[in-house]
Amino acid sequence: MTENYYDKVHQIIHYMVLYGVLHPFYYLRYKTKIIGRENIPKPPYLIVSNHYSYYDPTIISLASLSPVAYIAKKELFEEKSLLSKIITFLGAIPINREKPAPSTLKIIKKVVSAKWPIGIFIEGTRNQSRETLTKLETGAAFIAKFAGGLPVLPLGIRGGNKPFGSLEVHIGEVIPFDKNLSLEELTLKYGQSIAKLADLELKLS
Image (cartoon, rainbow, N blue to C red):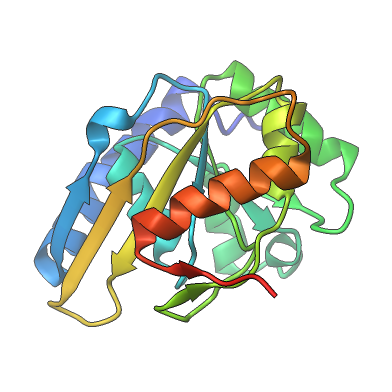
């Protein structure tokens, strides 16, 4: 029987990690500010953010004060490493970025039914530039549409690159799904909001 990573037990474990590990770590290591928590809606919804480092998923969980099922490239799950075991246990969703498999779509439906937020990064991978947002992938718009029109909660991460330096997470207003827009148009809308929240220039080639 396949384990259900989105049940009440796993939800409790997420909260234990959130308050027992993430809270003390980030508030002791950085000058941490979370701005805009009043914009967080009731789940399910899709969190879409910029992406600097491997810390970002935990930063988003800290900001949202919620268990989050993150979309992650399938290669991370194929290594059978300690990292793959941890992210699997924490409910990460493996995806083939070229062509999402039916198994991935099935998991997304399960997460939505369990009323968990889903997290995804707008560029699809890390961009260590602290000045520009240079690429927008349509994955977030695709998932929002596939899941029945999920609203998007845009989020911008600023700082966090120096210990004891500033780390700010700016949470924007919810962007409702608009069925009249194409995936590309939705993606641009999400990207514009994230760039503003993260204080980045949107500079698409």
